[in-house]
Length: 161
Image 1 (cartoon, rainbow, N blue to C red):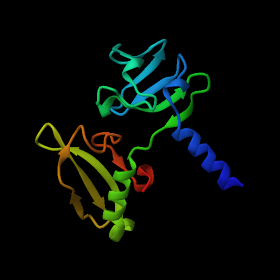
Image 2 (cartoon, helix red, strand yellow; image 1 turned 120 degrees about the vertical axis):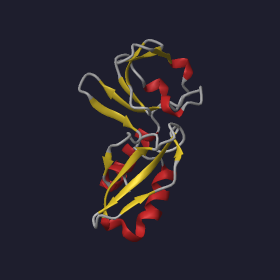
Image 3 (tube, helix red, strand yellow; image 1 turned 60 degrees about the horizontal axis):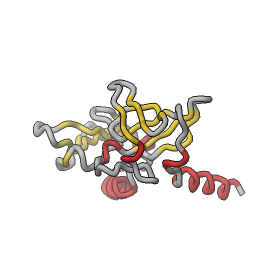
Image 4 (cartoon, rainbow, N blue to C red; image 1 turned 180 degrees about the vertical axis):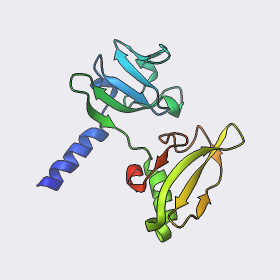
């Protein structure tokens, strides 16, 4: 019974839509910026920039094809309850890292997203417990691992893998 209730809750979270947004909800974008929902727009808190809600699909993705503007978390201001949160990694990223790390998963201390010398690229750095280090190949900063903050050290548990 408990497993069924948990899966129903997860299903509800995964189906959160633009219609579920309420004025004064706090949203977090994939790029890390936070904003407050106003009638017909989102006002970004640090920049005071407004994003029209018409620029979003029903599943909270940007119609401008900018993944960095995708809404990944919604909080209600009444209790500051998290009512929707997309994971740090998407399913493809989780599956890739889980498969890659499987042989030495117990040795992983943390994974970090690092900016490469090319300003448009980043890469993943993996620190192992025995002081070994692994650098994965570079990728475009706007294409992969958008939920990860630069230079933050993530445990496997935080990443959901």
